[in-house]
Length: 151
Image 1 (cartoon, helix red, strand yellow):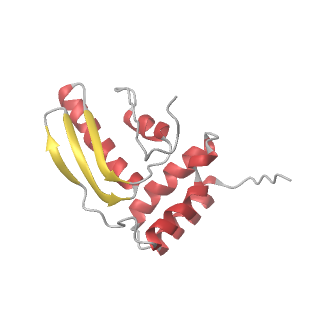
Image 2: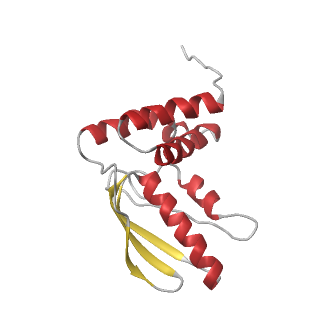
């Protein structure tokens, strides 16, 4: 039996934010994580939606994720950078990468920012859409430990 429930977006977002706050993540960061997860559900990509919360909180409890990362720029040019995510939550690190990429692209017409030492960042489309806009095209991709055959 499959059950389906209609849930108000704002109520779900508030619920998710509250969960992350209980794990000592600040309000702004908790909102970034919640928005990225809920966006995946709204687009029908449930594998990268709110069902990930349990995985994220388990990894936080186990010390596998730094909840207060010091995200730093390791290498930088006018239109590129490498960020070190300090083992932070992927959504938090990704938001910083998106901000930096848009900033650089506005200044140099094209930009690429790579991230290292981060965690699961959710659905790539969410971040590509945040990069894109009336003024830009966005592209986002990631790698993972070898657990899938390449296509």
